[in-house]
Length: 180
Image (cartoon, helix red, strand yellow):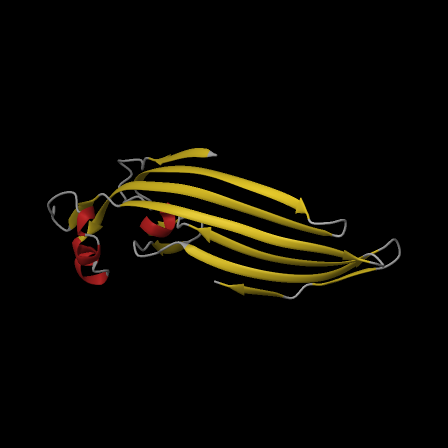
């Protein structure tokens, strides 16, 4: 999978854009496999790798940049020019390497009963609106403010399921634990 996304804010509208100009590149690949240990037991596994590069151009209010968010100390490499009036031009660039995976076990018993166990690792990078939004989101009727300090989200999920399936009766008991 390869994807390119570009945002070019329309100039001349008399207002600052909600989301600044940016280029976003995504590339990913995955592999999945199943293996039968015997007639009643199967294991499955999957892994996915994603690469994301976000390159933006945005002018921040100097007070926000230096005092409110302390970005001048956290991200001095993003400053791309001299302060102009109350604004500072920046070029924030983020690169992410993401891994997601799953591992499952399926065991069949007599009477159409099956035990399933699964572990899943999921991760998600912030999108440009979560990083850079600043202003009124007209369709949502709310003020949005992005944060450059948002990192990627990582979640671990464990599921154990006991199921019975037959023509006239079935059930599933599926407790799970999700850690974000």
